Figure 1 (tube, rainbow, N blue to C red):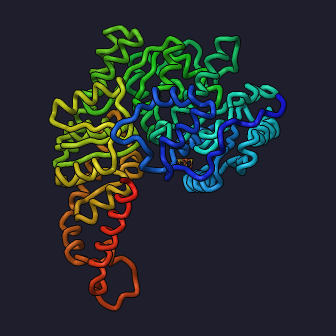
Figure 2: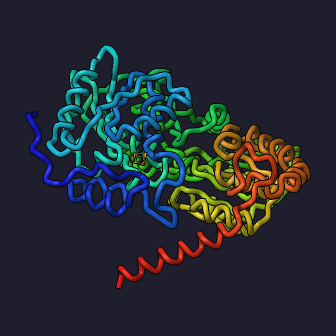
Figure 3: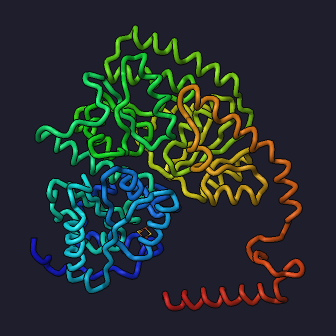
Length: 503
Ligand code: SF4
């Protein structure tokens, strides 16, 4: 394709995740991205929390691409965004190159940026190195309408996939994982429908498999495999996939388990391939029994096999839960998408769980968990904002708060024992007997520290909190006399002046 005509839309360079969402979205629509924005709005509906309150959402899709073998990743976005994203990806051990096509106002408005991206793709797409090249438009190129859909679909057999992952269209990094997973599944599904495709590694001929959706703790797929084996079922490669040909094997499963329930675009592709989808996950005794029933129904497993599998697996989980009871009041909040399953496991183990908040949206695949929790008096908040999570914690006064970094910080300031959901809870098995036993230990260790927290809070009372934070003070820092009063008057005068302009 030749030089792209200059975009009629003005370049959007001065905004970002701290700019106005409406402004950025309007710019994207004016620049020809209405279809992409409509699809994102449909797949990832907004709620009370409609703006990322955690890391840049594009980190989710970036991580999915970086974890795949023989897949190259190129970002198109503001340098500061790309710096943050590459820093974070290397912090999490990417050990892979992240490609970047820089731009300025001129290359953005003349369409030269698109040409630069196309050149970069041609340069990168070497079949001896890669199966696929992923190009991601971040906020500014999306708002400016950089048309990744006009890139060639393949170069020398290397697949080219362009996605828009703007912070003003994808509310969480969890959902951004789905943006890329869904785009790759779609590509692979169309390839498989068009003719023969590469044989997936480790394919067992004739085996009936279940495909799992969600980034799970490494031991969890094995635990789930142990539940499936007595039903005559194996495990297909997970979504997000680890290499391209895994996508074919996942699409070839007899049924799909949406363990993480927010992968809307991926589920659409599995459904288009004719695969039934099962929600929830095998947590605790009740959750595991219900999940095994649902899987058996979706995969046409004979009743006798199902009964035998349950008779073998459920007593082990029951035993593990009985041996690790939890006696505590716990609030749960996070942005991973597994919050309801964690709350369910805690609740079945004996914990009182008054509140669970997730930054992810409500979908039909979390309905069973929501209903189960609500029937036990838990308030379930989808698209929960940090403010809602904090208020719930203040209201519930838990023995332990599981949550995001700012929530944990707030809890510790108040002397409430707290654990970071992503690092501490997501980094443990959740399913089967291993999951049943894993939570009790950390809950006991943390709630046991409550008295120590209370002593620390009283010892540091009034020190290191907002205005008194810092170092180098010889004594307890105090405000200069009259300072607060003067600031209050200044603010009032400013507000009055703004009001006068408005009338
Ligand atoms: S790409 Fe990410 S970091 Fe950059 S402006 Fe958008 S949401 Fe913010």
